[in-house]
Image (cartoon, rainbow over the protein chains, first blue to last red):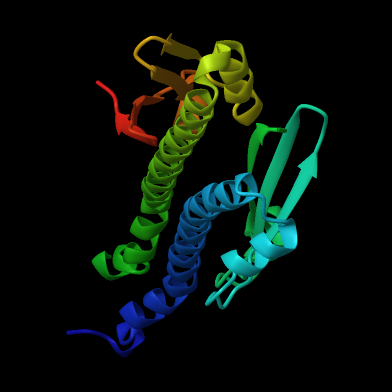
Length: 118
Length: 131
């Protein structure tokens, strides 16, 4: 016979465990989102490289890439004598509370591609 | 006596299992990052191959190697075969990364490889996965 002291014990234990589980799950989801976004940005950077090689300016590239995009990707180009670096940047907000305080840089996602300056 | 030892048992077992859950989560993330690195290597290889084909008449080998390392300076091995007579280029790039688990054992456990072959079909550049 369960004593009155043991009633609801499982519920209390579950409530103690719940925030830890939620934190873990949301952290993994957030990191997954960052990796997925990096892959998307790689594809966007490839498109930006193609547009640059066709002679489009950075402003035109930004406009073309960001058509129909809710979150605007920022595309910048930096030229040196031999090379041009094309960088795509996008920041996302983490869903895990407090994670952006610990790892702010992780959520400013960027990819770069270097091509020959011709 | 039994009543006393069973209190909080589930909580204790959960706390014992937290490191295992964390390791599984870390493994999932590590594999995701390795997959991303693989994809990035493929994109870089295709870009370098495309450059080589556009400049195939100017012996592009050295520039292709430069471009490869400008995009990723941790590439371990590469192989570039430029055939100016047939106007084809074969490129193969290898890279190994540690990831989180690799850092723990001190070995590069994720191996990424990318091979492509490029040629002309009329005026168009064709890039295919190499063997």
